[in-house]
Length: 417
Image 1 (cartoon, rainbow, N blue to C red):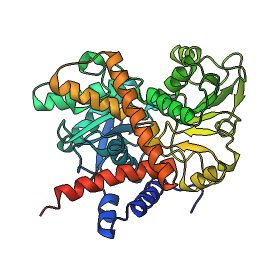
Image 2 (image 1 turned 45 degrees about the vertical axis):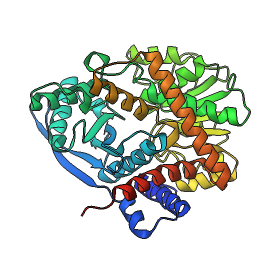
Image 3 (image 1 turned 90 degrees about the horizontal axis):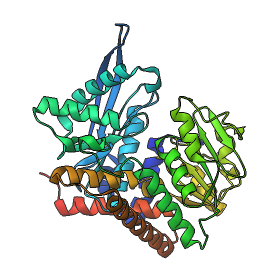
Image 4 (image 1 turned 180 degrees about the vertical axis):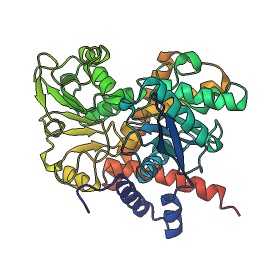
């Protein structure tokens, strides 16, 4: 296998392992590996200067056996159909693993949002939403934010969908602002889930999280708040990084001060006073207790996995560790808490938001966080139990549980016609 295995290759390899654990036949394997629906659309953008640029947009619905499709929308220049297919597949297993009634989906536009004005971003979002409108809806497919998108993106998508329907449909997307049907606690849900997953792993290993050292790669929506939550809970966050590089301080960083620095107009954490500058590659190799890769896919691979010194790798991003790297980490007794478990807090609270939208009755932030904590801890216990009983990794156990539940739903429903 290549050290730079693609996200889709990684997802298919992980599916192979789960299928082997479950003893599924070739037909079921093929059904689980194949997306139910894939859409590629042209997204014309009129720039502020009047010029026209045509972008590519995607939406993949991987599986519907357990309910409507669910998954994020990303705006990133490297987004393509294969990446979206992989992410949609991971979403299917993630939803099944944590026990929420969704199938997996994912979407995106191949664009760098940092190079667009706010008006251009709005036009891209609304045009993309209108292009994929035939296949989305509260009972069909419910998008959410991902890399390069946020709650404002979701508000624009919800408004575009509603304008076409002629009435307000809050449940068409999740991750919206609270003012238009969003849920309390949704903004930091993925990050909070990362913390709950990390603490479950530490607790099982008999390690006190207070004072545990942490490095976070990707100081964005997930990594930034994960660092903040871990710091507030008593961990020592010694390093964080973003797209330009990272900062390190052995005595600990103040994530709140770093987040305030970025909100004040800085475009990177690099150069923050009182820190040493490090590269993203160096951050992954720091001697820490917990490493949280919360950026993009494939950052831990065969070429650098042997240099990872952390005891626990808690995956905030989707697919940050390749299968080749998994083997190396397992051989070095590094415990990997896999993405389908560790970063499932976002889709869990997206489910809570969807339920609240459908019934037009909303919960308090404490209620949301309590439900999230219970759900994450229960899922971790199930995965850990299977891993121990079968002598397999947490990733293989998580994939096996998720894939098994989807396969069971498919068998129960039967095949039409």
